[in-house]
Image (tube, rainbow, N blue to C red; front, side, top):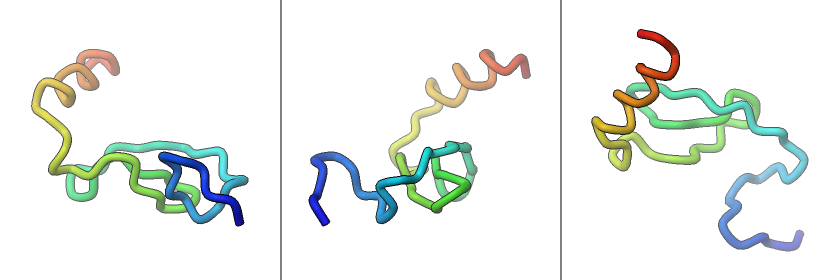
Length: 55
């Protein structure tokens, strides 16, 4: 299998469906690939998401 720089998903054919989980971070619901760990998500980022979705 050829590695693609910056891609750590074990399934190269996965069309990622990302969700934000308050305990995990941003992850794919289809293959469980974690794009961004929760420790790397800032409060500013979360407030922007909440504003975007209207909460």
